[in-house]
Length: 473
Image (tube, rainbow, N blue to C red; front, side):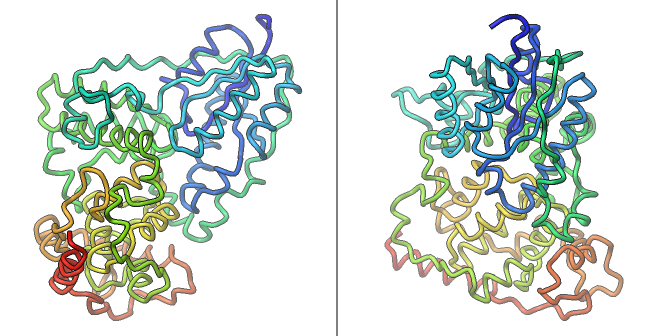
């Protein structure tokens, strides 16, 4: 390798220029840098909304790279074969990337690293998707953490490196390799007409993410303790969309939160705890990858979940037609915005898994298809927490009453009225947008009669408790 030997920089879920350790290190060498994104089986396997949002993010990131003198080279196929071909085409002597932690990505990356190293290519994976590498946080006895609070106490005082600056310029190669066209990938095809409805709610790219963070710290974080539980108000950072694709780094968020805490803003520590909740999800996914595919608490394997996703009850839940307004409002918010308020997520998930006694995997897969802020670790832990089968989960006997939850967190019905049109004389644009987002085959209209509850709140609670008692919980 010489000072002119290119470095292939393999982008994945790290679509940013600042606080990007691999990009920073590559630019520091002074060698040409060739940014690459590979559409492999893991990309093709994404759900409709996450894949569409990835496509938007890639287009925006490509423009940001061009402003620094670079190009984003797009290739499709097996990741190893694509990278081997690019090494041959460009004469690159190195392939660097930022680490991923889900089992499929780890298996792919290990295979790529071993093969390329065997061929004399310098391979390097760097940290940055998390605050702390999952294997670096251990209990006093040397194991991994299974409960959040001790995990938080173990990491809250750890040093987090200051975010790295974005490069002023990215050294270019003498010649660029050919790139496929992003439009030809049709990453948004499965969204169909829903894309036009959701797109106005997207905050795309690194600058938008930084703006979100700044606005939150300036005007919202002080009230975050209370406001984060109120779905009718704009009280959260909404950064999950950007964190999921790495358009902002968790370290950037952490340092902003620390500064706010030092300034005496009362909600700042709670914000930091939420960042660490995300870390906890990755910590568990790394140490117990079964959390993605099966009950984390294995004693739940014998529980008689309903697993038929074609049942009328499940279809009503999917379509926001359960007759329970808080549940239906949450589902409709997701179809219109691509996201769902966290309080609503808990109620929606609890209703499916406890009132309807439906396997959490059905909900997990549905969210995997519908959320633009989908994250493998957070999605799995959230569903298992709600179902009672996960680590540090809500107790199985705690069954959220969606009616009293609405009374407590949406007392003026502002949230449910924003998203449910049926029964309103003049429904708002967001409530009406739901009918533009959903498949026409559902045959729904704003003038429809709102349904009676498919399972009433008290009835569902008693049914769930009886099922738990019969299984010896």
